[in-house]
Image 1: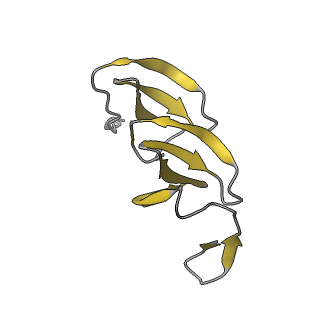
Image 2: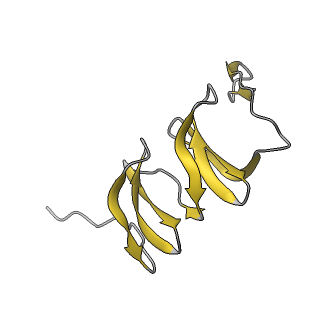
Length: 101
């Protein structure tokens, strides 16, 4: 069960706490990160798997894509689980660029 900050129930799932382990910070723009069998994946608040449990590392979804590590390499993954940039980098970071007017 997921509970919002205002103490209302956001969703009820059948995720077993024996199988899935949440690792804070875990909630990002509608997706919840969980670890299962040593890999991370993302589910929505209904418990539906959105990004498979194949990632070794992840970053919060502050944007439409985020760096994630799979098979020892980083790429940019979208919120739907597809890769914007396939994993091929040893390290990858998104930084905010200043805007000049």
